[in-house]
Length: 231
Image: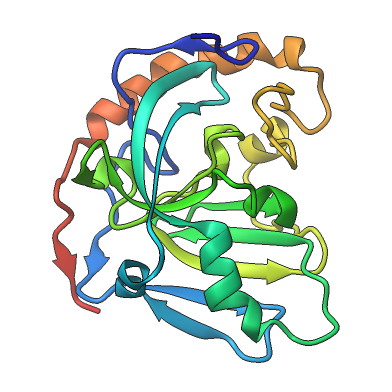
């Protein structure tokens, strides 16, 4: 199997995320996805609604920007385009042109994608991985999966979707986030790793992150299935 430029196949599927050294966030008994932004009115969608929408199964790889790839992952969920067209789009304010979508997780992580990338055919809101419900390491109860982009786009523990008419800024970005400066499209086959620097120049830096990521992942531990918390 041919991998994208600069990627190396890894055994298994390592845990990754915003707070690798901590247990995954707890999930409410009745989880929802909050929808906000360029809408007539914000609203919340019970996660149970996904079960009523057309289902999609997808076998795809996940490519970490650090350079490892987990291959042949079997995802199941709802195509984001289906969710957008059926649930979100009817509430978009007339005359407003959505250009970007921001995805937020229960762990505080947030990714941003161009609307055309978010609506790509292989982008899912996934609830199952390899025939089982997602565990806490990989985004329970639901997560974004965008195989054509680096893994930092595929927000875990999905709980918020924001619609924007221009690229949103992140005033709270840490120094590390500012230095890494994630590429706005993050397409793996184009090797769009960094917003400003050429791919060859950042490969060694990102690969140096793999050992500490593995160490922090082991410290975080697995809590599966994620126990419910109070709403």
